[in-house]
Length: 367
Image (cartoon, rainbow, N blue to C red; front, side):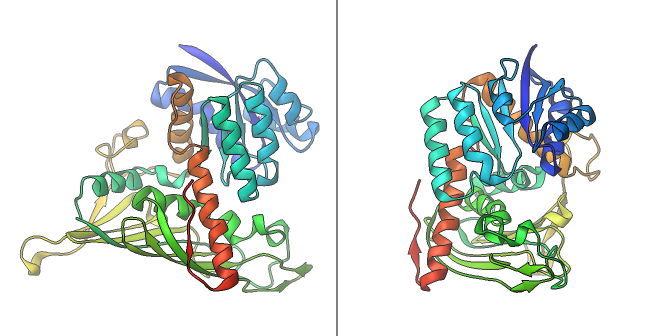
């Protein structure tokens, strides 16, 4: 076994999730590389010291620059605000250190392009964090589609709907300022990544993007609350995507429905351990969607629990990501999704803004 020093930038919500994941991953997956929580950096040295003590890091850095330069840090995990992603990633690649970066890849398409160029020029392992697509259920759906179980895909509907800003009386905050923090910048990368994983490239799209509550206590809102995309995939299939942070009653509505010539599939992250599968076979009277509860027969489930139907959770998705990042470093080979996959997501979101502005269908440049 070989240990590897992990440097984590960001100690908040996602920083904590990654700290826990790198602490647990070797025990769950018996990885050849054993993570060592070496250095953590945050918005201040005092915050970093607090996080280091709470999460079990050997020490705190004064800032992310010191973390990247530290010789004991052999891989960098970025879980800080997206406006910081580009500078940290470029510095880490220049220091010859693999990088895992939380979504979205950067605060703009230009950031994503620059980060992808730096990653590929370095030749180092790089990965972007799209955790929801790693549930055993959605991994299983990818297998079903690859095996042609529901035939030729004709239609896709996806959504990512939450209600944390549904109440117009919720005060203005950092999420209501700046395009990168709006619904399309914050939530949309997840379902866009999902539809690319399940359906392949998007050829053309049209879009509408809007602000539902333009004013809130404490200020105005200068970014979007919801958006919808009409899609034509390169395969020829039709599709639709809806993203909202004002979807009253929805908490984690990362959901999709897929129609094929031989069946259909439905999934909803609020019930993340279930897949609904319809097979167009047998007598019509006995046909219907079947609920499949995930268990050890499905991808990655068995590492967490031996009981079918017992379920995996949010943190488990992040641990699977950590396993894959360590595998990329150990093998010296890319593991999906790489920075280029993150760039493909950024390209679709940027194209959607263009389409929303002029009301036209737009071809999606392929990365």
